[in-house]
Amino acid sequence: MPSPSPRTKKDRVLKLFQDSKRVGDCIIPPNRPGPRGYVYINYQYTHYRAHRLVWEVINGEISEDDLILHRCDNRVCINPKHLYLGDAMENTTDMMEKCRGANQYQRGYGWNIGGDNRGHRTR
Image (cartoon, rainbow, N blue to C red; front, side, top):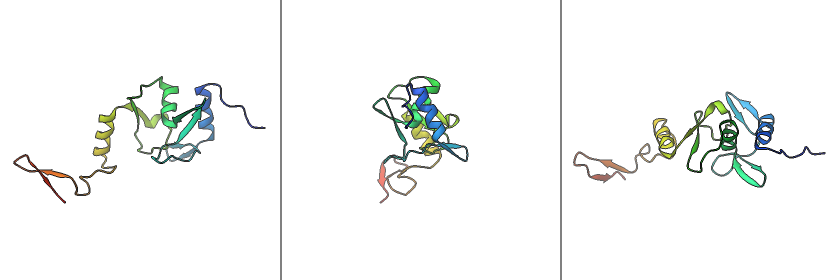
């Protein structure tokens, strides 16, 4: 007989941790990542990104504008020690400092700003 569905968000997160495995310092849920690389879970007919639900249960509600960022840069990780609250600017800064993502300047595309402060197309 299947186990009853979790009654609270905290119960859902506890179940998620029970079903997860450790890979290094990261905690990886068994759910398959979605197209953008995040793990989604359902709770009371609502689709949540797993790391956001974990953050919310541990630290309190977050606004839709807030982002939960990963120190480990592993989108599927739900380890609370790897998660921190941020915004779009912090996320972009983190991405650029770590040279990750589809950064057009890493690949030699985009605009170079010359001494005359006018952009010149590189390709």
